[in-house]
Image (cartoon, rainbow, N blue to C red; front, side):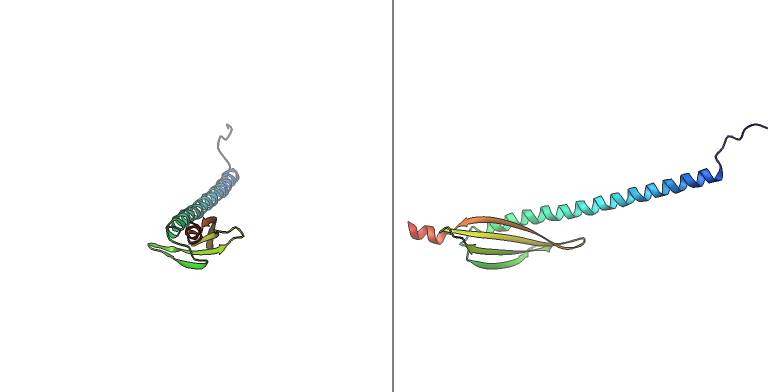
Length: 125
């Protein structure tokens, strides 16, 4: 009789278990990558909306205090602007926070900037 040139049942079973575990790990990593990409996209969108809303609001005079609202057509995003005077005359510190819903809960992006108070600038002229 010649030598048997095949795999034993135990070798096939071990190879199947190793392949299954490897495939499960790869699928888990891909799922995590997709989730992370979605969260990153949310942060990018929130930063863009924050900049846009700051540009829009600074076209008019800014009142010291807190304002908030929603973005039209963006049901998962809302904003809050906090404006306060600084120690430097004529400057207002603006903090624009955009809140958004993403997998894992509510997240936020905050931008800070300084804005010249036009009311004081026109009085000085």
